[in-house]
Image (cartoon, rainbow, N blue to C red):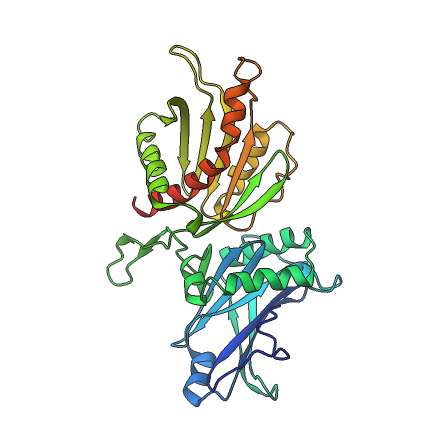
Length: 362
């Protein structure tokens, strides 16, 4: 539940403003909307307007986004481990692919807690399944109240609710799915498909699988010339899968595979003509965490059990993963390998944001 959106906090509300709290427990899902002196039209939109929902995932938290009628998007952070132990989890009778979650929505006054109205709406099967997956991952990773609040404030300082909605991993209108970012959107009138404009991913969780080290990479950390340089490498690799990174006079073979929203890259040590390229670092990028779970598991399989991270606990936000595969010792290229280690993390970051840009331009 959100610190900012708690009616007991010192968050200042103006007339007609609203904020939300979302929770998922073994008893089901609940959305409380807190308003400050809403007029009749605002109340009517919440009670009878079309209900839209979206999930944005960032730094281990999920933000439940809601929009009712003509009212604007609202965000509510959620981490399952913040619930008491006896409530942590999902309804025991839930069956994936069969059940939808019903969402109990209550409209309350921020000052008096008086109720303006309530409604029960349905979430889509895809959104329900994603909430279940996130809640299970979060339940396995405890978080302190201080860390929870810090992550929330960090996200609120960078993104508005409408921006989060544009970057959502899954969306629905009531119980019906809507296209998530970078998926085709159907024109209601003609039934034709047209590409939906995707907001470029602005933040990745960056994992070194061997050590378990994790950090956050943001778009502003990558200069446009560097991003464009790597974007051209992605273009070059489309024909055969292979391209070549030329850096300070050395040529590094690079192999890239793109499947949907995922990119897998093998960065190889320099080799002489006729030699078979040897992978020094295996890396992958997932623009959509929900669609990157198989890729995450494949990375761990390729690492042969040498990871400090866990294949069964994929990230819940867009991610970069890297695994060193060869230290250069077999071919007498230790110096080449050590030199690569000085810049490979920068390459991984640039690759991720270049791929995000490339996908938008497809």
